[in-house]
Length: 581
Image (cartoon, rainbow, N blue to C red; front, side):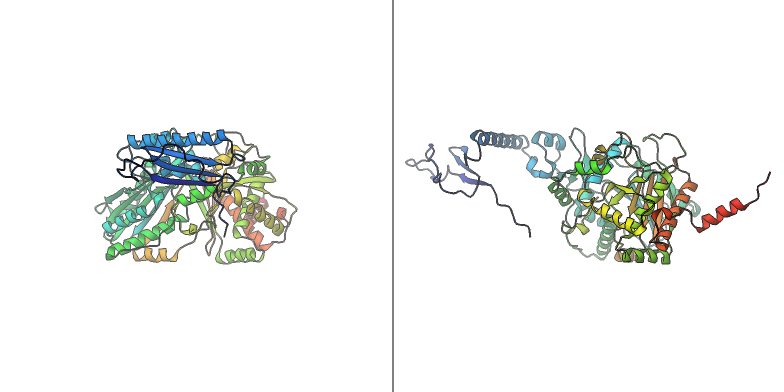
C-alpha cells in the first residue's frame, strides 16, 4: 500500500463566537490580537496554519507560517487570493438564490465562477462536469470538423421473435440510463478553452414505436433497410443528451425489430455487451414484477480523475522521438479516386474472411509456444502488407488499445469510452528471423503503455506530419473484449436473432480481428477510394501471411509471399496460356 503523504496545511474554522457570551454586558470578546498562541521556538506540525473565527459579525482569519520557508508577501498574496475567491462565492450565492453551482461542485472541470455561470446558465439539473477521455476528444474533434459525416454513428439492431412487453422494456432502459452517468452525458465546446462533458441528473431516451403489421410481407425487409439509412442520416447533436435513441418496429405477430442507435463517443466495444446484458436482466425482472439490485459500478468520472492524476508524465517528448522521421502517412497504393473533401458523404464497404478452426488453433498454439500474443502476429502481418504495398521499410498505422488501467479497481465493469487510437511504428526488415522480429515488436509495443492515454490530436501535433494531413490511413482493431454467454442465454429467451452492429470510422481502411474459434478478419474501406476487388485481394493476402507464419515460424521475414497457393496457381495458369495474335 502506498504511504500517504503528510499534510502541509492546516485549516481550522472555530465557528461564530458572537453568541458565546449571550446577552452579557460585562464581558465581551476583545478586538485586540492576543498574540501568538504558542512559542515561536516550539516545533509545529504544519508549514501553514489558517485559523478562522466569526467575531463582531465579521470573519477573521489568522495565517501562521515559517518566515524561513515562506516570505511575508507570498502569504499575503495567498490570503488576498483566498479572500477574492470567498467574496466571489458569496456573490454567486446571492445571485443564485434558488441554488447555483460553484467551481467546487465540479472540481475535475477546473472552471472559474464566471466560466461556470456562462456554461450552466439557468440549468439546475447538472450532476457533474469533467473533461473528455482521449478518444472522446478525438471523436468530438472529428465531428466538429466534418459535421455531416456518418462516422462513429453506431447502430445495433436485431429481430425479436417473442411478444415484447413495451412498458417493461422501456423501463429497463430508463433504469440503465439512471445507473450509468455516461448515458446522460452531452458535450460542450463553445467559448471554452477545451472540451467538457456535462452529465444531466435525469434524461429519458427517445423511444419510437412503429407499426408495420399491415405492410406487405415482401416489402418489410426493404422498408427496414430504408429506415436504418434514414436513422443514420439523422445523426446526433452532441450538445444534447441523451446521445442515443430506441426504436421498436412491429412487423406482425411475434416478429419485431429493435434498433438501438448511439454515438460512439459514449461507449466502447467492451461496454456495449455489458450494457445490453443489464438491459435484458432489468427487463426480465420488470416482467416478473421483481426489483433487481445489481452491484454498483464506478462512474466514468473516476477514469477521468485517474487520467488527471497521471498528467505529470511527459508524453510530448516521448511521442516526438517515437514519430521522428515520419513526414507523411504510409501510402496504401490502392486509391482509385481523386482528392476527397471531408464534407462528402462516406460510403463504407466491408469484406470478410476467416481462418478455419484448425488454422486458428494452430496460430494460437504457436503464439503460446513463443510467449507472444495473437495480436502481435496480426500486427506483424499488417505491417508486412503495408511495407510491400508502400515500398517502405518502416510503416506507421493506428492501433486501438483498451486503456482500462488495472490500477483502477473495478475498471472491467465500468461503462464508457475507454479505448484510444495511437500510432504503431514498425520496421519490417527482410533479413531477420520471424520469431525474433515478433518478440521485438511486442516489446516495442509494451513501451507505449505509459503513454497510451494521450489524445491522438495531440500526438499528431507533435509529429513531423504537416498540419491537415493524417498521421496514418489504416487502423488495426483487435477485438479483445469478453463475450458473455449469459447475454446470449438471455437473448435466446427473448427470441433475439439476426443481431447486427453497423458502424463507420473516419479512416480509409480499418482491419477488425474477431478472435473466435474461427478467427474472423474484416476489412472496412471507403468505397470512394478503393474498389472491392482490391480490398478482397488485400484481405486474402493478409490471411496468406498469417498462415505462412504458422507454417514457417523460423523463416526470415523477407521470405514470405503475399500470394497464397490459390493465387500462385491462377498466376501460373495465366502465364502458361499460349499467346494469341
